Image 1: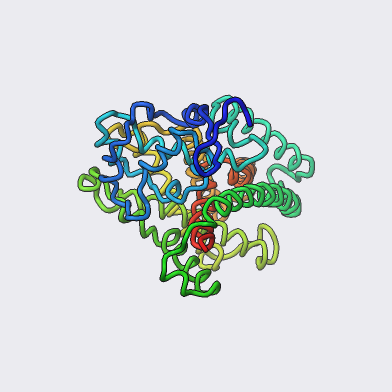
Image 2: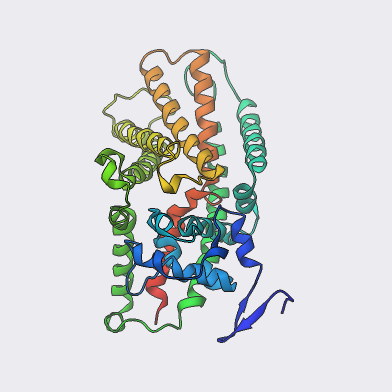
Length: 387
């Protein structure tokens, strides 16, 4: 056992340096917290079985690393900010929950890339420059005339081959992270007693029930819509946080569907299609959602009156900015496709759009984007792990 670790009843190891590690991922002062429970009482999502953020704060205070990163409550929080607003000790419990999620993402990544990106502006700049340079180098080795048609300057086969490599790297990193998270959750909660009604259900029923719960949580923003805060009464419906989050999520997913459709069914790269072609129509609608959602999210982070945006981390700014620029450049390309695709400027926009798209995919396992898989997985595994 490490000199910095100790055991508590139940055989768990605790680490007094743990809270200090989480502090590197955000701006909070949980040392000021004396566990009064006010944050749990004010949280609109707290239930009899899900008492957060008080429970997670206490786990971090005593240094129970495994229980913290394996907790379901960590991913149930949507940071409405009410707990931070009402905290008399100004310990910023909402920011603590966000920081703990960032720490969890970093802990699931064995490469150290996520930790590096979350804790250093310099790391983000270096990563962006290096990855962009590599992608450009591979693409520019096989380019055609710079004033040619789209996908003549950057051939479709080159994009396809690089895309396969990018997807393979991302999937591998995601699988490793997902496996680490699943194992931690399973080993942490598998011995807990399941509710009486769950014991009566078979495995198939439990799996289908867990899937239904995740779909309601992820697709319909069910709990996010319940996560009202004191600012909601001052915001019109079109600036509701759950709607902004929904637009970003489904905007990106729609673009992913449109891109996959093009890859599988479009006769050839650069072939002209009408605006009502299914993939083009889906991509256009999804692009509108993405641009609107990211624009509103960035705008809210510039407003000092919104609690959750007071401590926005650099990775959040970068991620949202990348998505916004990706959406805008996509619409520029769409306009050029119907007006003047054979231009040097148009091909430069295409090259920029492709590189940025690949970079965003590569960011998936290492940044806030990882919430897409980790939040869903945590809810699913917790539903199955109890016996």
